[in-house]
Image (cartoon, rainbow, N blue to C red):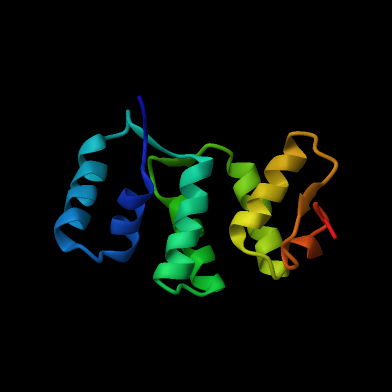
Length: 132
């Protein structure tokens, strides 16, 4: 059985900023057993990036560590793990936000020749073209 996770579930799990809710998430994961897989979709990973880097002020390396830990967490899967890893590589080497990196690799995977943007940082990535 596959169950989707909302961003707030992951935020509680990662930050433990609300002990009561974090404990509920921990219990959910422990009770799930081997037959349950928790899925992180495209929207959730983008929201997680924004919340952790803007609200909780996680630096780039800390955010990437979270992604690595999620990949290593039993029963958690990404909708497109290959694209998440590609986005992480772009994010490490570029100046754009993770969400922009992820958007770019998703569009490439959907056979887009480029992605137009007004974002100067995103436009530095090869998968984007700045619209002047």
